[in-house]
Image 1: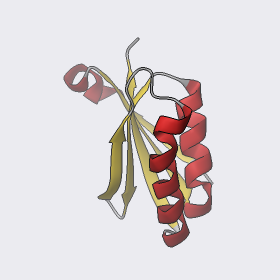
Image 2: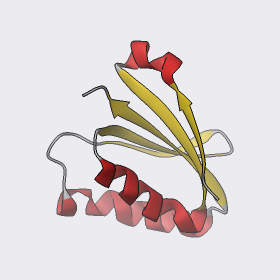
Image 3: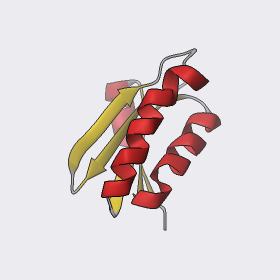
Length: 93
């Protein structure tokens, strides 16, 4: 189950649009990969019970092997969480 909630009211303050997705732990890495592949994601924040578990920025040019350590960490976190939320900040580009 994936729930999506956009918060465009934050767009003017952050220079982008914040979106939040609720996912099960087993879907975490897959959903993050999907969001990154879609493009224009500048920051990924994983939360559990409203508290930030991990947060990492995505800069232009970050691909494949440079992102591998963060994705490996997400895999380990996903094994521990039953449900969490992914908050992303998309660029306005």
